[in-house]
Image (tube, rainbow, N blue to C red; front, side):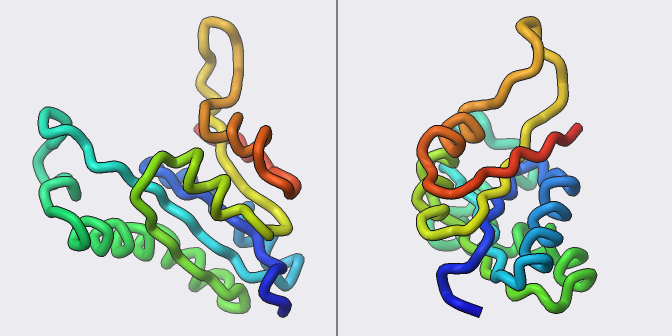
Length: 144
């Protein structure tokens, strides 16, 4: 499969299963590599809670997030063994990381929570940035 033929998926903290399944299925149907991206930012000290990954520092924190990401998608790797998966964990704002990662992708998969807001359903800042700034089709997958 050509190097530029790949789908991207952003797996956030809530790891919505609908979004992950859509990304794996899209990659399978295209015979494409799936690039799973997770962006993280170091939380402020008051934001720490018991057992939070933020309690480790620097490179160790990136390794912890990579372990988390691998655990989240393991069941999907087993279900879709024919899909080549590349996992990336990057420190930075999710919208910036995802827009950069989507460069050269054939499809970007992002999620949108279905909870109603006072003004009705709308996309969040990460999905909005993706729709506005990437050069490939964007699949917005609703999730609880």
